[in-house]
Length: 351
Ligand SMILES: NC(=O)c1ccc[n+]([C@@H]2O[C@H](COP(=O)([O-])OP(=O)(O)OC[C@H]3O[C@@H](n4cnc5c(N)ncnc54)[C@H](O)[C@@H]3O)[C@@H](O)[C@H]2O)c1
Image 1 (cartoon, protein in one colour):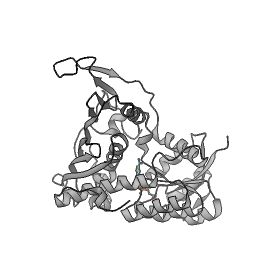
Image 2 (tube, rainbow, N blue to C red):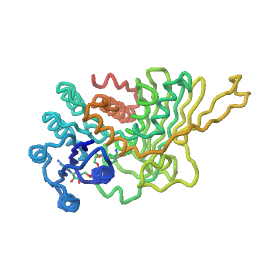
Image 3 (cartoon, rainbow, N blue to C red):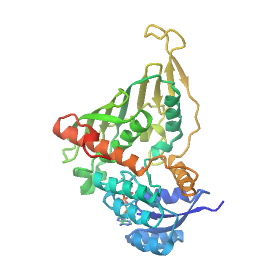
Image 4 (cartoon, rainbow, N blue to C red):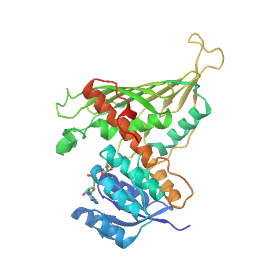
């Protein structure tokens, strides 16, 4: 089968990770790179692929079938719409945009043109998450009651040398927690209200370093999320799931997600399924089954999926509108922390 020709915009941290993944795939071929820096030019030349400083020039001259948009968030709207106008399927890195207006504009452009847009919430492609979602849909947990998520980790001091990471918007709510908000929506259901408190007590920057968040879901389930980028713990999906080679493997299994329901519960990433064999009661023994699954690289699966979407074989696992809903709920966390009020995402902006 012919490989789908994919351009990459932005050869920074995640752009290069996509390029390296693509080089190992049968489904996609790297068509060209657009990246203004001299380092990006040298990188493209080293790979022997066409280089452009400006993605618009690339789009005019190369005509790829798809483009991975791995540039700063504020550029996503302009670049995604430029792709849509040329019939090129964009995979827009998360967050879909830096504002809800930009996110909505991408969704509207995608729908008007009837051209699919994918958003890079790669965790949805992890086989662990796919299995968990299927089990919840099959009723293994019964009616969902609660979810508890631990997302605590330690970012080293040099991470904060870039000024924007010390300022509002550069903190762990928009950069990291958005992954958990997306997973909760994907696994457990739509978020109807958000309460939050945030703190900058440890690092003392203008941006939060920790937050505690409460969500109410449309199905009545309640969720607590604990977040910190200044806590020395192994309790984060990135460390515990082993999905990225950037983080060292953990010597013992660590759980980060606890999903509870009336018939059973599920701990992730190990996929331990707890349930009663008979006589549901806290006085009766509760058993644990370890659900079998094949480990897999979600970034790889995401690019394979992109190729199938381009060929018309699949619909996006996360569309632009879905990505906008995740962004809206994540922004509601900031507003709830700032105001001390309960925030209803659907009253923030119609999407
Ligand atoms: N899904 C994930 O796991 C994940 C991980 C990290 C970052 N991200 C997202 O990916 C995006 C990029 O993040 P990063 O950490 O790679 O940032 P980065 O700063 O390392 O890289 C961004 C690159 O884009 C280039 N650039 C800027 N404007 C450009 C333009 N108009 N056209 C082409 N290139 C341009 C910059 O020169 C830079 O090299 C962000 O949206 C971020 O939130 C996603």
